[in-house]
Image (cartoon, rainbow, N blue to C red; front, side, top):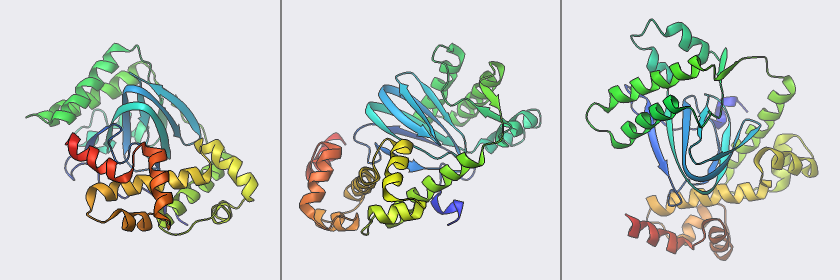
Length: 287
């Protein structure tokens, strides 16, 4: 299985302005962040609550006011706890266009010679201020927001370099790379086959481990058992279908790998706190 088989297949922003803004609260169909990766960079800003996020094999508990940087290619996902957060996903090469002065500095980041710290210090006022400009301009899209957005991104990266909020890259060990590849293969299988029957043996076989060892491995990577994660992914997919199609609940349950509708409703309520029909109704009322 190739690495690109489990890349997020989604365009962020426009071809001429490859940057996208997302506001995520409990009503969002992808509130729980299932594991994925993309070729763009991502900045996450926590507005309230907490977010336990795993980036590759590093776990971070982000709280209100925290700013998280995720470099391109990093596998990430996590569990929000009464959390509202915003994300900006962007192609950093946007900043290279017609800009010869900053090219060398940006290339060090693009080529991963310098690895920007994942969690930014919460007391760095210039960084917080520029991130606020960045998120607000993309969230409102008023006239001229493209200028504010790009200018804020330049400022943010400049402040990071000025304050040396990065590390010089050292070679990742073969053991770490192998562990990430095994985990990505499992995530890929879930994404591609969640609508079908998947057993613990199926998942452990993909990882090349015994079921017992695989369960420990998967939980150490995700803070969830393999079956918990599989069910979560299915419920998140069900949320999208509930909001974007007119299919009956029974059909959506089957589409998402649940052969028993009662079990689907019970599992849905476990993760979302409401039944599928109540979920649709609450979204209609909120809109």
